[in-house]
Image (tube, rainbow, N blue to C red; front, side):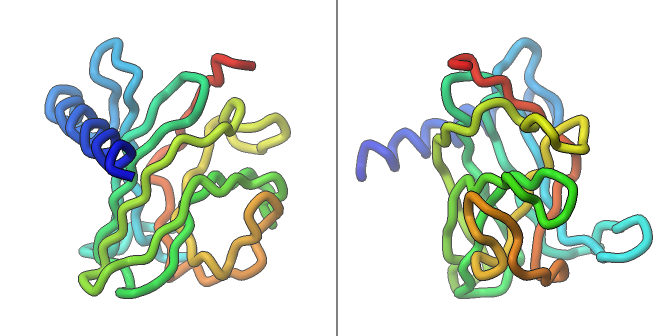
Length: 169
């Protein structure tokens, strides 16, 4: 457990340093670390970002044997179970991949870090040109299967699409 925590802290330090150099969403030069912001959005029209709403940031590997990431969410409902997932279109997201889960603390913050064997993202058959990463209520998703509930005002949605290249494929 201590080793995993130390690795997560080290990964977060590297990811933070890359953000300072590269800006909020771009990789740092030839870095293999990507950055993605997730936002609370209004689930209608063009799905605008909720001003001063909940948000999160994920640092992740853009290629490798496994999709490795550190996600930090803020302004969420306290003491709530969340799942970070890859969502392929169309609804109900058949083939979605749960990346990790966590429970928000009393302050509404959650930290989720993992390395997951996802294969390439997006998966074949996804209607998008990149992968959608969402933070959803754990009770609304059947991991490895599909979405089973829909409470979008409680979720964080991607600020951009991402790609991951599995080097073991």
